[in-house]
Length: 115
Image (tube, rainbow, N blue to C red; front, side):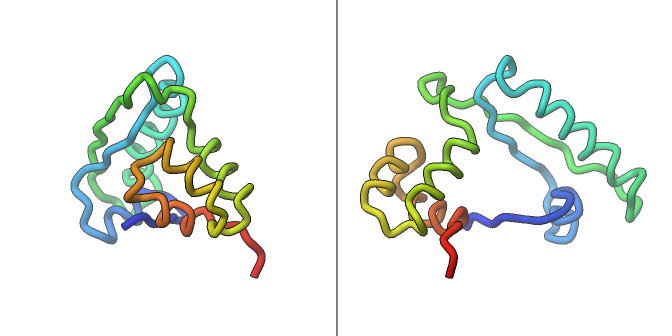
């Protein structure tokens, strides 16, 4: 199940009993500085902003270099362009960037169509 979360991810993780975060990155060259900033927030946030608790460890998964051109922004923009996810062209384009089994869930997650 995919879910969008508002607020600090470590608070949501603690609430759900998460024991480890996994973060997908394209490469350290492309995403390293942003991921380092998030790592600092996820490490110090629980200690300084509370409730006082031990930070959740993070592991990084580096993606296949063939997909280094794909970023979360690319996915969000593609979903928005599709106008809610019922566009077959959008589904086809998205299935070339993400596992086809997740296409519908990702379209629903990033659905920006006005109801």
